[in-house]
Length: 473
Image 1 (spheres, one colour):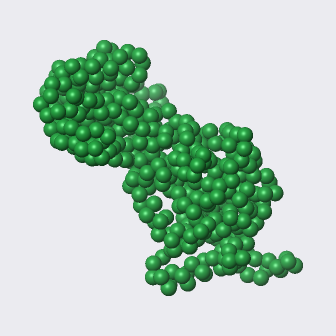
Image 2 (cartoon, helix red, strand yellow):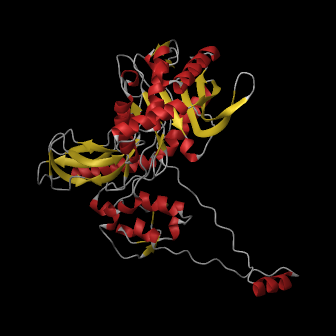
Image 3 (cartoon, one colour):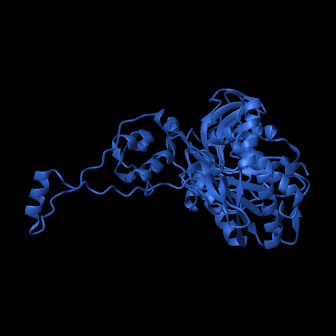
């Protein structure tokens, strides 16, 4: 018997997903565990593995289409099975959702299919992260999904081109257009109702927006008195001012909304205070140089920062902790997250687990792998949730010092600035030379970490950075 394939939550906070590509096509056999499609969540692009088996009879949501969790994206059943009744049911569900004020579903009514849901970001907010140990529940850190590759996501609409006989075909007072076309039009400041549609029933697709040229605005504006001479001089001298650039509307995707919601929640909920210190990194940088020469493979500075932070956290378990409302949870494992910018925009925080019991070489190897996955949008929820401590390093951008917002469930985050040569004085105030200094700023949740406790931790971290041998004590 034919069954609906529903969009499922592929990340802890996912409310809606966008289908990047289908791995199976209509008519293909599907077994349990097969990858049906790739779905872009609020964090990353992830494989949707089928929990059903049969023949893929109908793809309801094409590539580039969005669907909320629980909405139908495909139909599975026996080969040759009549699915007309099920298609009608799906179309009615989509129509009911539009009437109720949910995201509208456009589609080819003649075929009875519910097509792509209107573009929109899922509401950002807190959600339970992946549980790692017992009742250890962690809220998801602010991250980001890889942005959609717009150039490859309008195949479902472009597959059925038709003559552009209408301009902004309207159905029930709404212009019929694909979600991707709407987003592209919005980003370019184009009125979607003015774009001729070449899709089914005049539906506007991505190619229509890309090829659309808005009509030129009337230019019959009378010249102000006395402007003639100035305009003539400007024209003669070739110093005619260029017109100002037009305002640009940048759509907010799910990743950015998630980041905004999580950081706003953290800032508003956790009473932040900040501790700052400068550390001489001569010994740390020297040790890194020597190890890199021996290994022949460069270990990142971030790997060393993760290791020294983990050693300090092992000695201060009250900082490696989280506010749980009626109690404080001190974590047994030091799981350090590193804030990573994705090339397509947005942030995500891959997490290296159990750093207190691992060497810097081991940490560096996993960190490089996680960063590669983060930048390709392939991190799983287990790989980006539940950091007990976070590091944000902006030194490569020339930033000397900054403060960072705490990533829940952690109670602290370390902001790392760039290395800068600074004068060094002895206890008597005499200049003794210069040293490479790094500014470290610790943001603390005062509900968990008191000022003195945070100061002791940061002071120990400074000591280990300046004398890495202290990590052996």
